[in-house]
Length: 292
Image (cartoon, rainbow, N blue to C red; front, side, top):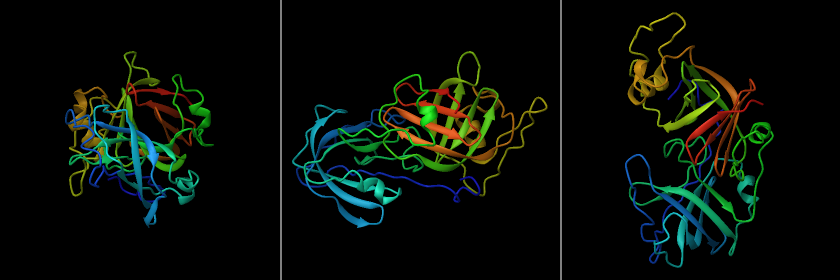
């Protein structure tokens, strides 16, 4: 965890627990491999009004009419859905979910058979495995902090599935890419041309834990190059190959900027207060720079 991240971070979470009731869904699908959890992508209708358990947590029940992720799965009369969130509660109240409300639920199967929906800045699953709940027939638009970049996206992002949130965003540029932090580490690698305007991206948990050393004390091969520290450094060494990996060395120290993040059906938009904007697509794990 990076130092000083608690201030200014707004967490958002939606967690869905797969049918715990008799007659509920029988394991919608199994995880196909260790790095790609199976999806739980359901279209159905709410069978009642959500029940509040505590601030930021409600229970609703869903009649699954279509299992987009696993058409052969068997679902019963109801699946129980646990919805956890840390947005302003008015955001969810706007959906007015009641008996008969058509819903689209998109998430991932966790170990043990749970269907979990993470929104941005949650970290239950790896970054890039965010999900959402959205009443069908409702399409939200980009927020004021992200609309200028979202409108420049070269591929359709679909509907917004969460509000634009202001996050203090640690980031660090590398010779061949960039890292961002938001309850996990987003690694952007430049494309074949080596230009910092697009390429591929992946999401990783923050592996760093105190009291590990912040760096290994590596010596950069040239002036102006930097060994990344803490979570960025451990991700760089252990998941990207370190100095011999695709990112190369960092070209300046990690720093934090204010920014707006927003999740869409098909991607994430990040807009830093400096005006730099990034679109991360889910479907093909590519990214592009689209400045404000």
